[in-house]
Length: 168
Image 1 (spheres, rainbow, N blue to C red):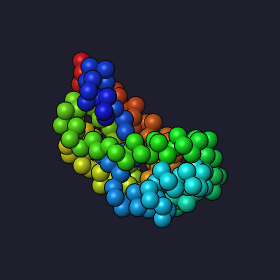
Image 2: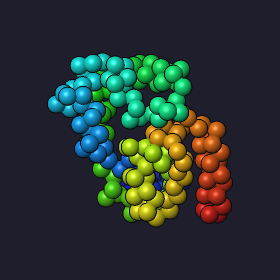
Image 3: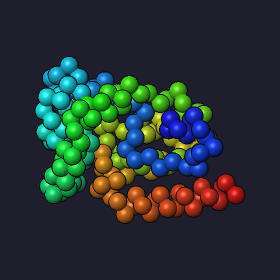
Image 4: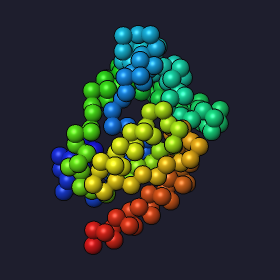
C-alpha cells in the first residue's frame, strides 16, 4: 500500500490478504506476552515459541490442521528473532489509513469475517479505497490464504481479469 501510494505508476493492482490498516493496541498487548513490547517478547522467546503462543491471532485454529499449525510455526521460526522483532516494530509503527484515498489501483481484499486482526479493518479499507473490493470468507478467522488457497487463487485471478478489462 505504501508503494501504491508513493508510486502509483508502478502498481497495476493489489491483492491483500488478512491485511490490517494498523496493528491495534489490543493485539499489541496480546503479542507482547507480558513483555514491554512484541519485539521484546520475540527476542525473549525466540520466533517459533512466540509464534506458537500467539498463533490463534494469525491463523484460524478451528480450521487449521495440526500439521498446518506446525508448518506455520516452523516457517516463522526460520526468521532470526532480531529480524522478526525489527519487522514487528516496523509493522506496529505503520498506519496506512491516511494513504488510502490516494491509492488509485484496484485492490482486492481477502479476509475471514472472524479475523480478530483484519476483518473490521478490511471493511474500512474497502470503504476508503477508491477501487477496493472486499471478499470475506464466512466462518473463517485469520489466515484464509493458508486455509482456502484455491479459493483465494480463483478470486484473485477473476479480480485480475476484471482489473485488466477496466484498465483497457
